[in-house]
View 1 (tube, one colour):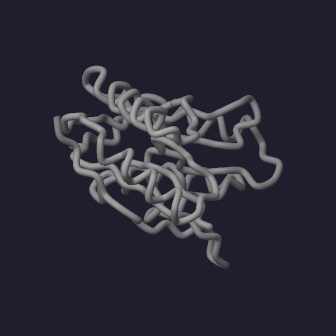
View 2: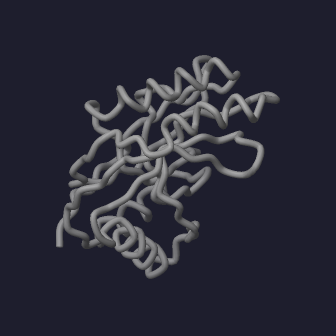
View 3: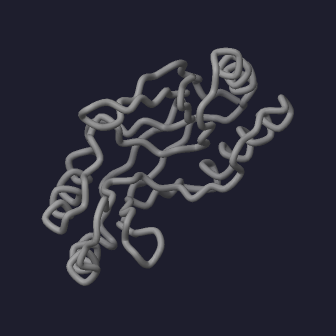
Length: 180
């Protein structure tokens, strides 16, 4: 069994600014995301076997969406506890939302269970214990409108996730080029 998810990998040139924020958050007892693991999740599949991975791959090969540009701008958090801090992701138009809709349509057509919820973000830090919300909010507010850069999205990837002694390790299972 493999814990699988579909994602857009963040390009190297954009990681420096995100790492600056995540390291600032580490001072407040949040755990920074490993730079190699920075990604935007399009769909999470959970624990799946090889047969399910093949079915997901077949469904994803049917997705039609042209390459587009996305912007990483601003920092936010989920829920009032500040347990997950993320970078916000925008596309110039509706491309990112349209890509997600195409993925959902393809998975639904193939009868594959999937999560239809979608909030475009890149997790940069997580709290593993109690934190001082005021301190975290202070750091978030410094970067609230910061633009970290733009990147061209020309493919999406199906990844496997494995828990190791050093945290999660992500492995690309298959890449899917975007095409119309």
